[in-house]
Amino acid sequence: MQELHEIQLDPIVTRALEEDWGYGDWTTDLCVPSDKICSAKIICREPIVLSGIDVAAAVFRKVDPSLEIIESAKNGKKLLANETLLTIKGNARSILKGERVALNFLGRMCGIATVTRQFVDQIKGTKCQLLDTRKTTPGIRILEKAATVTGGARNHRVGLCDGVIVKENHIRAAGGIKMAVSRLLEALPPTLKIEVEVTNLVELQEALDAGADIIMLDNMPLSEISLAVRTVRGRAKLEASGGVKLDTVKAIAETGVDFVSTGSTIHSARWSDLSLLVDL
Image 1 (tube, rainbow, N blue to C red):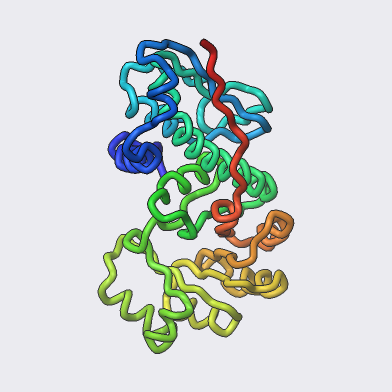
Image 2 (cartoon, rainbow, N blue to C red):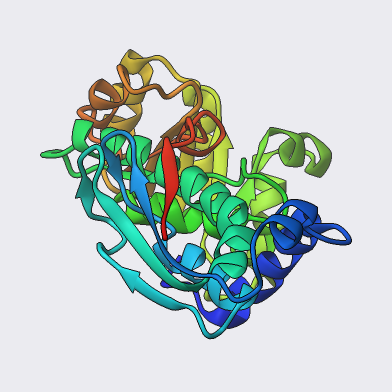
C-alpha cells in the first residue's frame, strides 16, 4: 500500500465524522465561543511507531480547511513517550470536533505499525519478508494495510481482484489442486501469479507439479516447513502462514521460506495511547 491519496481518504474521513457528529455537537457548540482561537497538540503516552499522521491531518482539514496543521514527525518514525506528533492551530470548536476521530485513526494505525515493527525486527537478518492478510476491519482496510507497510511489512493482496490464492475450500469445490490450477492457467490474466494453500507435503508436491507460483504452507510444524524448503528448492516461492506469533516468527523465517504472513499485526494489535491537549 503506497502513500494514501486524498481521494482515498475523503470518504473514510467523511463517514467517520458523520458517525461521530450525528446531528450536532451539543458540548462544543454551547460551551465554546464561536470565535475562540487556540492551539492543540497530539502526543503519544507511550513509545510508538508513528502511522496515520496524514489521516489525522485529513480529519482536521475536512472539519475546517482554515486550521493550521504542523506535523512534528513522519510516518514510520519511532517516538518516545510524551513526544508531539501533530500541532493544530485555529478555531477551538473545529479542533474539538475533529479530536476523537483523528485520535481513533491515529491510535489504531500507530498500534498496528508498532506491533508490525516488532515482527519485522524479529526476522531481520533472514531473507524472509513479513506479509499482512485480509483479516481487516471492514471499511478501513486501506488504512490498516498502510499501517503494516509503515511498520515494515509488505502487503499481501488488498482484495480478491488483485491476487489469486487457491485455499482449502476452493480446492474442495474445484475437485483438487490440479483441476483448480489448470482452470486458472487457462483463463487468468498472465500478469497474475497463482498461489496455492497446502497443509502437508503431499499437497505441496501436487501444487508444485500443477505449476503454482507461490505455495502457502498452512499451519505446518517447523520440521515440515524446513522439509518443504528443501523439496521446492526455489522452484516456487514459499509462504508460511497460520498461528504465527511474535515468539515463533523468527524460527519460521530461519527455515528459509520467502514470506511469513500473519493477521495478528492487524486484528490483535492494541491501540496506541495518544492524547490531544489544548493550550489556549
